[in-house]
Length: 268
Image 1 (cartoon, one colour):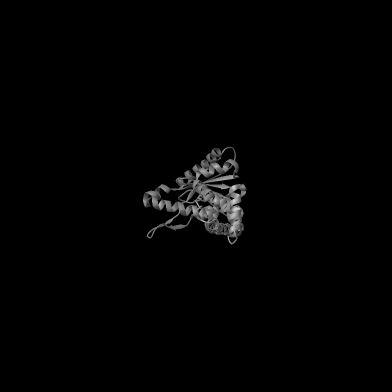
Image 2 (image 1 turned 60 degrees about the vertical axis):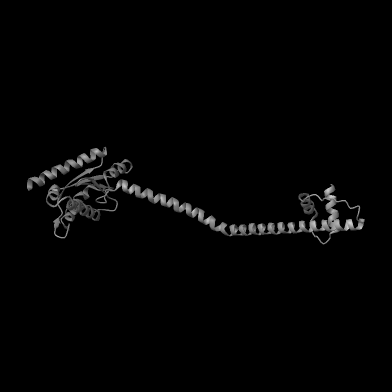
């Protein structure tokens, strides 16, 4: 109470110090207490005048300090307002960027998943589907028929020209099969020189025409290197309607392949 009264009196003595009373009272509490000296040898008016000057100087110092604090606070407020204005400007952009980034992330994950699935189900040499795809696909999406193709005398090609030439023959044969079949049909490299064609919505009466087209397709010369042009080998074929299990259907198709291969060997 005494300090508040003193601050009021000091401000009254120094009206040119335009400061808030609460701020003045708070700052006076931080200052060192005034040391009262013995003034009995001096006239009262001189003592009061000296004290007033000292107090006014203290008020001026406090006023300067408060002004500095006030300027600093104003700068901080301006900085906050500036940052808020930037955020308000960026807010619509962030609302677009965040879902867009999430969509890109999800798309990237989907692409990676598709690539992994492709690597899992695609034969690395020919680009046809592999045996794993055949077993997985027929669990839920069974074809109406299966055709098995087995290249004749393929071992002789590997023995005479080498396995690299043999691989090029397999790649060329697989490519020609894709050009000769419907987009709904699936070509599977079952193993080695054996291929399986998965036929969907296939009519048995069209089987003979399909096999003729495949045989005509296969009678082509393939340039395997700078010095060798090789006629694609003939193949033995077996057609079986899909019934029972996949293994049973493949076994029936393979039996027809074996019969036809025996006929080819007998004729040669």
